[in-house]
Image (cartoon, rainbow, N blue to C red; front, side, top):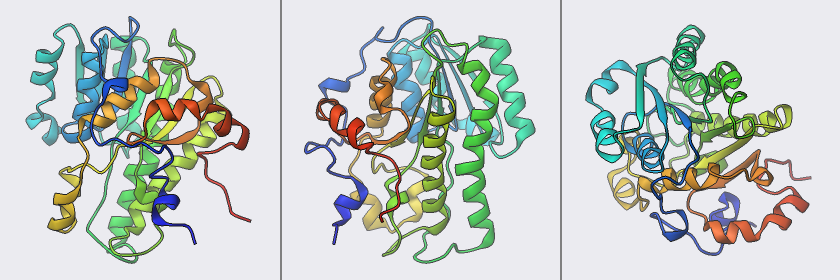
Length: 294
């Protein structure tokens, strides 16, 4: 029987990391110019650090949406000004589950920037800690709406802006979770896991239908976040990963066109040099995609 580590791909590269390291350290000016980034769902924690990484790397503009109450208390505007005063920030409210609001947000980004080069879908809903089926129908439908439908809506309305990118047809990255691999055991969250698995399949299908657009579903690591505080305290305290890890990994991932990785599940914890050494293996056996075991 496969171990939990094997099922979740935790050791796909023999070396793993819990914080940024030299190969993915974000260097000022490492992105081409102009370079516009859009992050759906960022006000703190992982989303904020994704924005910080792209700002340090020299993003021309960063468009972000979040709930109004979160925007009001977010450290992002002041921190971006400190990290890179030349990066333009467009920070707008948006309900990621409503087509009309996502369309309006996309229209404002189009009018302000003309195009985007990377769309990062980071909006997420975990819900209460659970061990079997979703605690309430509301939790299940909310998780599916935020984690899955929202990804579709942003891709649908942002794809024309991505296709105007000077660097291929842009990139769509969905922030997923190792929770998508779990089917039981303590703490298995049915709604969250299913919705994250759907994200991964959507990324695969998008790669097939829009082959010029780079796509990836990226595990950000096990990070202490406000959303994760519903888990037992001892487990929360043991989460080992730096919130900067995912942002550093994403900048590395999209600053060059690595199309052999498109449409695949990736983890911020994996060592990128060892991942690159596996190109022939990944391509030949079509690894890092969801398949039925026959």
